[in-house]
Length: 191
Image (cartoon, rainbow, N blue to C red; front, side, top):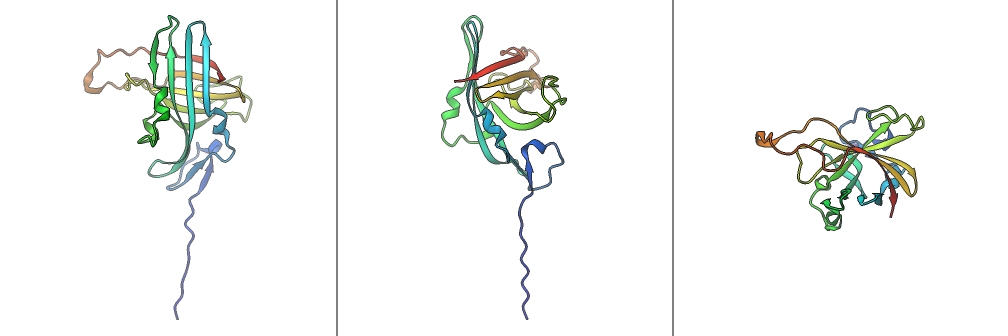
């Protein structure tokens, strides 16, 4: 007599807003509430000549080798107050089959609650924000981050900051270490 036993191997789904828990092997941090959709699109901050534009897309089921996650990817353009374009990577969003989503200048989707760094005292209890890695394409050694807060369907707040010390390659300590985009909170409107 032959006995066959079937096992279902389904990965554990962890909701995006609960992703700060211990992540088991093979788990999927899924945007079950479609919260990341609040940031998809093109956003712009304008103050005189200064202009900061970001475009976000949502990447589903990104493989981090030991788990999967829905993430945001993005590119940006920054024009300083003198009207000089310092960085413009927006065209990289239109490259078909971009080799790896984590090669974009902005990537990730870590959920933050009200008091997690950077704290958001004006956030409501139960409201959460999204933190992503933010790269300067000419200063990859800088450890920068961006936190996104949804205000309305047409407005977000973006907080750009240095998350840690710069990591210089080949002991190139003379490389410029100032942030080319000022660390600040920007109110951005959907365009």
